[in-house]
Image 1 (cartoon, helix red, strand yellow):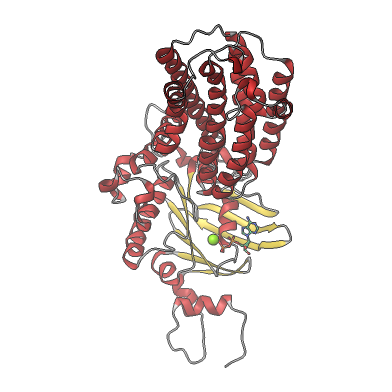
Image 2 (cartoon, chains in turn purple, blue; image 1 turned 90 degrees about the vertical axis):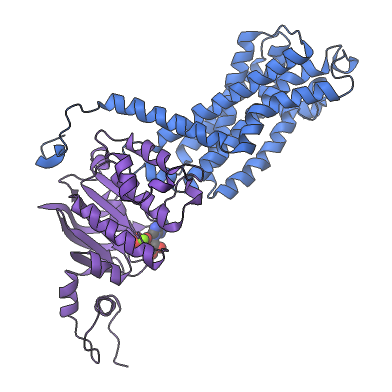
Amino acid sequence: MTVIEVSNLQKRYGDQVAVRDVSFEVRAGEIFGIVGPNGSGKTTTVECLTGLRRPDGGTIRVLGLDPDLARAELRRSVGIQLQESQLPDRLKVWEALDLYSSFYADPADWRALMADMGLTAKRNTVFAKLSGGQKQRLSVALALVGNPRIAVLDELTTGLDPQARRDTWQLVRDVRDRGVTVVLVTHFMDEAERLCDRLAVVRAGEVVAIDTPANLIARTELPGIERPSLEDAVLALTNPPRAAA
Amino acid sequence: MNATASPDTARSGSGTRATPRRIAIRSTAKLVVTEAKLFVREPLGAFFAIVFPAALILVLGGAMPGFTEPSADVGGRLPIEVYLPITLALAIGTVALVNLLNALAADREKGVLRRLSTTPVSPVRLLGAQLVVNVSALVVGCGLALLAAWGAFRITAHPNVPGLLIAFVLGAASMVALALLVAAFTPTGRAATGLGSLVYYPMLFAAGVWTPGPLMPDAVRRVADFTPLGAASQALQDAWAGDWPRPLHLAVMVGFTVVLGGLATKLFRWS
Ligand SMILES: Nc1ncnc2c1ncn2[C@@H]1O[C@H](COP(=O)(O)OP(=O)(O)O)[C@@H](O)[C@H]1O
Ligand SMILES: [Mg+2]
């Protein structure tokens, strides 16, 4: 079953084109990655998915609904972890979870969620005193506290140390195992390779490939490189072809 | 739910679903309680909003020579009694341009408003909760100041109570509108705080914090009449002395509320 359909999405900021032509479909229960260099339009794309921004062109259907028209409804069934979104410095972990769970008709049990995220020991810690990884985990918890059917996670692990990144990956798998469809935006290829069932590779606001990580690697042929990595494959797709060095 | 929603929408089939109304009430109450906690966790801000007006009255009355004796400078009244409505105006200015403004600017800068717009709760509701909390703090702070003046110095005044309430509400409304406008077009928290204090001190001056009552030079007063906090202060002083606020001051406050509030609504950026 398809839960998200994007066709020919376009979005400009003034005369700056952020998204030129993006189309993809996300199936229920998968972890769908959107990868590409900084500034390639990933965040803008997911912001359009959730009605935070209005597209200039193209169509979007999320759970069969147009995010522009059914914002209220989609906010109940789509949880989003925004890139660079924080909380008030002096808000405690449990207070944030308790507050955000009160926004939904059928929320998750926030105490259980807090335990799943490994935040129980920090329940009385204020946001400003959390480590980067703990802030991210709280942010993911807030995206999940409404029991969404789709979770959109934008640059979840940027700024985390290697251990925290691996912990966060496990978290994303756990989320999927709860039956939630995950859209994961990242520019880390190891992350995309380990986590994602399928990937959309974007370059300058356009999708240049959609496939499984294994297929993306398999179809890459690079002179002089015997076993290309996903990073090689994606770089080959996102960099304009160069004359052989 | 309409027909296009997929069949597993009700996958967690709990029997007693909260009604939208109950959710709205519960979440609004939680927002207000949370904002109240955050307010008191900012000790300096909470002090200046809630304790400072009363402390100022106690210090002035207790330590300034002659402040509790009738004085010819203020037409034979007690200086402390003349200063009380000015203290209320000071409290209005502080809560609007310091507490409320800083809270709004921080929420936007940190992306709290943006995060809220991804949930079923609109950031407008957070703004409402901020207003409830800040206005409550203002009312408590002013109440304590009145109590301190009455308890420590046995001030006997015969204010025009409806006039006082009207002046207070309009004064607070116009200053809140000003704070919202400053928050609307300042890009960062730091810019909001900076511009806030740039407006704050002239406002206090217009309110007569440094030149109370009859001590304010006429020329200054004529300008002050046309500022929101200056008009509020004059209206509070008139009502405190038993008169009705003058139409000019009421018109100035209503005008600022409508114009600044309208601009703020148009210009406010949520992220
Ligand atoms: N609010 C905005 N106003 C103007 N330009 C923007 C805005 N947000 C993003 N952009 C621009 O749009 C392009 C795509 O940005 P973004 O979607 O954030 O990319 P990514 O998430 O892939 O890094 C970039 O060139 C960026 O500078
Ligand atoms: Mg981004």
